[in-house]
Each structure stands twice: as C-alpha cells, then as structure tokens.
Image (cartoon, rainbow, N blue to C red; front, top):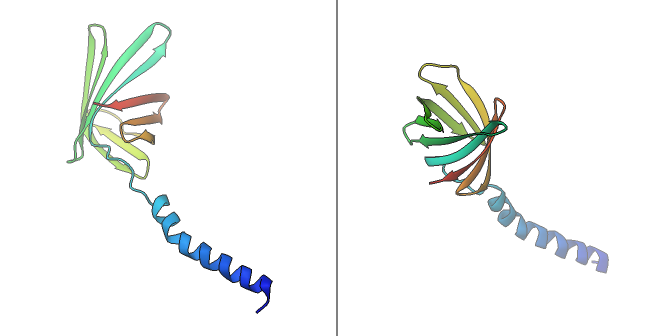
Length: 121
C-alpha cells in the first residue's frame, strides 16, 4: 500500500465515521408548533394588529386579531408538516403558510401577503 493510498483510506474511514453524526444533526426534530403564539402585523403605516394564535394538538386553532377596540376571532382546523402550515377556518377560505424556526420559541410565518414573527407565550 502506498503512502497516498494509506492517506486516502484513513480519510475515507474518518469521513464514514463522521457521516452518521452529520445525518443525525440534519434530521434534528423541529420544535412543536403547539401552543400559544403572539405576533404583530403592520398592514399600513400607523396600523399595528396584535395576533394571538393558539394551535392545539388535536388540530384545532383559534386566532384573535386586535387593533384597539376592534377584535376579530377566527377558529378552525390546521395541519403542520415540514415547515408548511395549512389553515382551514370554520367560515372562510383555507390558506397555506411557510414556517421558518429561529429557535424553539420563535417562528416566522409567511404567506398570503403576511410576514409575521411569532413568539411562544
């Protein structure tokens, strides 16, 4: 065995021994979306809407949107998988959002013209 072949064999062995660790890190479980989340939406200058969403393990959700004395409540069902959140309000049109996790207590939700950072409560 030449020195070059020996070095290659050592490198290949090292790479293979590291592969399972790298695969486990890539497959790390993302945080649970269940819980109560608060975010703010600014649809126009000077207008700030507080959004509180509660996502339950049974697939139901409730979202409360508040702007001063104006309060709207939406209830329905949702599904979440692989960074995609789909909502189906009881009396409305379904929507699809992408979810990016900043950490286990912060997520950025985008879709339908919205871009909201939610914090777990």
